[in-house]
Image (cartoon, rainbow, N blue to C red; front, side, top):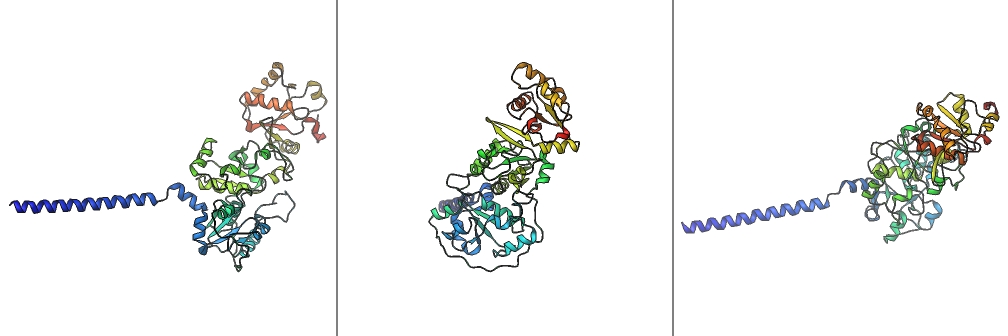
Length: 434
């Protein structure tokens, strides 16, 4: 009996040891799987970007595009890369800053340009640029190819410099490839917006200006017809989404940037820059973060500023203001659009010349309590309507700015507030003056 009991204890001990070993092995496997399984952030990143290490390991299965242009390409590039520019896929043969300048080529022309790059609908494409000194050309080309029907496109995180700094091969040899018969059946423009559609539905969108701060404030560095920004646009620079080495900032940091700025994943968002390049890159990052209703305004500020009937915003002494051009006011008046002209000229100036239908306040120069009281007298009228309020002052300067701030302080939404550019002095349409 005792011997049998001893054998049972041995068997029990062996079974327990086996069970513990199997359990430990299972736990180790689960822990290993938990470690290797990519997070949601990693999955999102890997849908839009690849690392230099990944590209080096997968060179034989992808097509690499160098978006920096021929001259830079000739000085050294990723082996096998094919050179192009965003302009080669865009309409550059029309009048500068006209309605379609810089926008995507038509389906036939774009299909031809893409076929000459040797791409097919099922190509796996990796695009790189100079992320530190460029304008996000990789994002613009990714956005373009997707509109043409090539879905499997990603960007190289850190761009050419990241590849080079990682110690991977560089060559000056031109890659050889054959053209394809790729055809764009129809452009998918769901992620872009035209000037006309944006202007017509402006209040439906949150608009992000992705340019440098001085451009947003009014600097005209690239031949813009006017300085400033789209009305009430939020300034969030393209470069602020990147680390100093040109790689993308961590996703949790990017999430915080947009959450802190008041954006929600369901918002309808328009991104723009000077010519729709930085903004295309920006739009791709927003999509990566889960913002699904994002469109790139590819005509961007070049075209908007060159369309005089469209209003703009400017920053003066660290305060942002929205502006109506005289042409826009004229068009609004002639088409009976909802607009209130709030004239602050002194009484004698108003009597001498004012735009037909303007509301007289005589509040200029809007410095004293008496001046401000004259504005308060029309607050009920302003609050009782949904009209845009266009402030008319002698020259469109300080008096108009002080009026704008006073109305803003009294609760008038800045999306309704505008200043007439140049004021009454620069109003060119005598037929609309009393």
